Length: 468
View 1 (tube, helix red, strand yellow):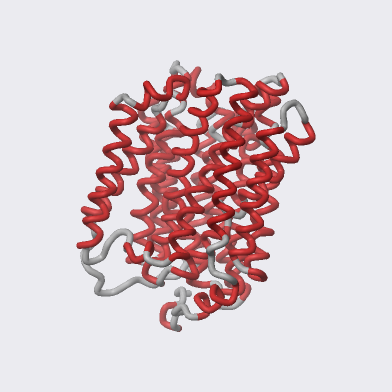
View 2: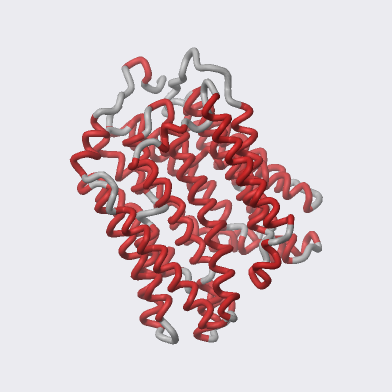
C-alpha cells in the first residue's frame, strides 16, 4: 500500500472516530434543553451518558471479535450503520424512553469504531509509521472535547434534534469513502462464534457499569452495601470468573487468555486501567475549582481546557516519539508527568499558577496512557487474529478503570469532608497511584526488544490487501 492510499485510509478512520467522540462531547450543552423538553429530573438526564457508556463497553469486545473473524470493512461499516440508526432514532424520538433506546444503539455501534480503526492501522501501516498514525487517532478525543461544546451550542440554535441528525450525512460520506479503502481480509474455517463467552462478558460489563454508576459518593459505604451497587459489583466478579472458565474451554474464545500470558500485555492492560484514573480525576476538576477559588459553574467548566488542550497536543507528539524511541520511554515520560500533575493539584491550594500548570502536566501525561502508546504495544504483541480484540481490551480496561477510580475518588473526597481539603486529598491519593503506574512502566520492553516483536509479525500477503 502506497503512502497516498494510507493517508486516505487514515482520513476515513479519523473521521469515524471523531464522529463517535463528538457525540459524547456535544451532548453536554444539550442536557438542560433535553431535560426541559421531556420534563425529566437531573438523575434521569444522566442516563443520556450512562446508557451510551454501558452499551459502548458491551459492544466493544463483540465488534472487535467480529472484526477479527469477518474482516475490518464489513464490521466497521456495520458499526457506522448502527451509529446512524441510533442517531436517527434519537432525532425522531417522541419520548425520553425512545431517546435512551437510540443512545443505546449509538453506544453499541460506536463500541467497534475505535478498536477496529486501531486494528486497521496495524494491518496496513508498516511498524515505523504506526506510532504517528495511532497518535493522530488518539488526538481525536482531545479535539472532540475542544470543538464539541462549541458545535453543540451552534446546532442547538436549530433545535436539539439536529445534534443527532447531523450524524446521518457524515456517516454516508464515511461509508462511501471507506468502501474502496478498508481491508477485507477474513479468517476462513474459524470455529463457531463463542456466544456463551460473549454473553457472559457482556452481562458482567453491564452489571459493573450500572452498579458503579448508581454509587452515591456522599454515602459511600451505605451505598456500597446495597444490592443496586455492591450486589451488582459482586455479580460482575462472579460472571468474570465464569467467563474465564468458558474461555479456557472455547474453541475460538472472545478473548484469548494467551493475551495475558506475556508480561508486556499484562503491564499494558494494567496501565490502561490506570489511564482510567486520569480520565476520572478530570471529572472532578470543575468542582475542585469552585471549592478552591470560588468561581462560578460556567467558569469552572472552562478550567478543564488546559488539560484538554495538553491532551490534544500531547497525543500526536506521543505518536511521533513512539516511532523514534519506543513505547517504554514515552510511557515513562507520560506517567512521570501524570504523577507530577496529580501531585501539583494535591498541593495547589489557592495558587492559580500551580493549578493550571498541574492540569497541563496531567493532560500531557494522559496522552501517553489513553492515546497511542498502549495501542502500539498491543499491535506489537498481539497476533494478527487477535489484533482488534487486543485493542478492545484497552478500551474496556480504561473504561472500567474510569468507573472504579471515579467511585474511589468520590469516596476519598467524602471521607475527608469535602471542600478544598477533600479534593486535595483525593488528588494526592491519585498522585500515589500514578507513581505506581510509573514504577510499573519500568518493566516494559526496551526499544530493541520491541522492534524485534514488531518486525517479527506476519504481514498481509498480496491477496489480503484491500480490494480496489
